[in-house]
Amino acid sequence: MKKQFSSLCYAGLSIGGNGLCLVFRIAYPERHKDQFYALVDEIRERTGLIVDESGSDVVRLRVASYDPKPYFNPNAVPYLHCKPNRYAAPRKIKRPMTAKVEEMAKQRCYLLIDIICEKKKDITRGRKIWIGIGQALAGLFGDVEGRRLFHLVSQWHPDYYHTECESMFEWCMRRHSEVDIATFFYHCRVHGLTFK
Image (cartoon, rainbow, N blue to C red):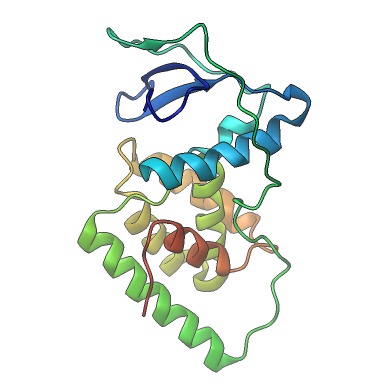
């Protein structure tokens, strides 16, 4: 990682110990979001790693984690690239579906969730991503089936807890009116999962 990114100031284990905390020096603090999304794409292209979107929030409190051998570079060069937020999942007002289109969307979801379970693939890293997936499943499948599918998708996250997942789905059931199932399909595609 340090050889690939000359702007990397710090790299260490995440709080859970299963991921990485990366700190980059950026050239344009006033364009933090644009620089963040450029880094998101570059990190994914160069390493295959998926970035937690919550790192784009400059006021978000982060608890310190421990790494016995962190990487630290006080002479990191400023990162220059910027990109508008094209990484975020589509979030649009839902259009009414015909019965046929709804059934096709459900079948595609089932196929993708089968693949997720077979590969034990976590597509929920990042709280915003997890919420979007929950809202998408709640909107298409409703309470009972949506909840079951949300657990199936969420269980592969290293910090999955049944009770937390239940609480999150309750929240998603109350607030899913503007999230399309395309959000779920999008996050599957980001991880190379398709129903074709």
